Image 1 (cartoon, rainbow, N blue to C red):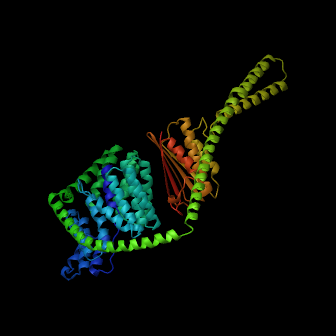
Image 2 (tube, rainbow, N blue to C red):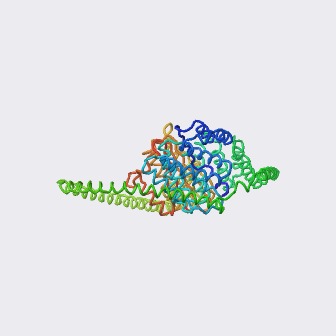
Image 3 (spheres, one colour):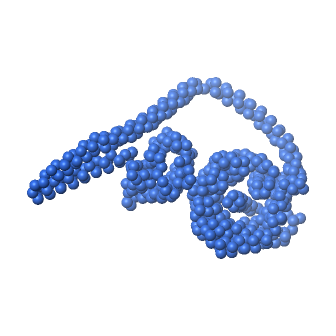
Length: 594
């Protein structure tokens, strides 16, 4: 399972083509062919190009395309030399942005190698530092994605998810559907491979698959299907895994077909073996071995860590560093003049600040504003505390009423019924009409007794003792659904035994509060509540198609009960994640230990 996820992650890393319209037409044509996975045709176009006649910028671009072709054909060590050469030449022609863009190509190439020992963090850091000054959300999103990949390699999984969600937000803002799908895929990989949460992984893989189908990218869709199949196999849903693997096998792939076939047939063999279909298991085992034998494993797994390649790598890096030192001398002089100008400007600004008569008044207003904010926060905290106390009191009052019904009124009715039955037995010579009257009265007493008994057991505000959590949530969804306006669906999976009553009440309260938020704030027409119990964990996913919200502007002080929900989740040692974008609905994920 892990091997498949690794392969798919590398393949799905963000690779945005850099189209340079000012370059030689043949080079632009070759670049387009590489982007369409036609490396052989791109190589033919490059071979027709007169390299000596190219300008220095064209030569830099030529090396960049050559690196992409070599990388696609599995010659990673040669590709690295061309990437470093292109980076150096772009920098020498003052094409700094293009030189910086190659950083991520180098990172991708190094990271994809087995047993890699070269640390590439400085390439990502340089890329983010440069593009943060350019205010380019697409490039920043790419940088965040690669940083997330690096953090995952270092086993900092929470930091990795944080960077992926940063990238996802930026790609949503720029409406980059292809890269949004890729980030969903990588988030799923972290949940599946590193956090062992296949339900959350499947959720994001399905989001990714929907976008990939719209974008019509067979390679990314291939890896999505393989990863979904791996998740279903982990959940022991082997037939669904087989169905997805066969869909992946039918995709029109052109590059590295033997490699992809070998992977798919290997996993199909495992799934058929798991369901004891040994005939098909043997069939796909033979196919897997056939393709494995035809692959030149040695050529594809040449390690960049080889001594000769490392020497060339560090030699090229040293040349770039020497070039940087020369540039830094020029920059230092410019910085000195800028510093002098800043000192003069600072002196003038200082004089103006001293003469500003309104300074004290502004400071006073700021202090008042801070005090008001502190007061508002304290008031909100008090309100939340009051709500908790009120809910606790309501629970105690319901319990008291239930006990009174059961112990007092229920006992009285039971005694009355017993006395009535004794009276009926002693009255032997009753007439027929009187006997019917006794019978009717006895039935009424029995009905009253049963109603009191049911009321006594109907405790805890909706989580009924004889039904449990799932029926209570389904009843809640049925009550708050409005025909023609709002439909709430409940999809449970894996609930075979009842949970502790206190835990069921807490979970019901959280779901009830989130459902109320959908009614009050989302303007949704449809919502779904997914509840999954897997081993000692529960996964709850609540999603709607409403107006959504900007998660960066969410405040726990808002009137949406988020602070109370977060507090209850923390008390249950769980985690809460909000995924939402204005105009595209809201998804809330809760992972709870049970």
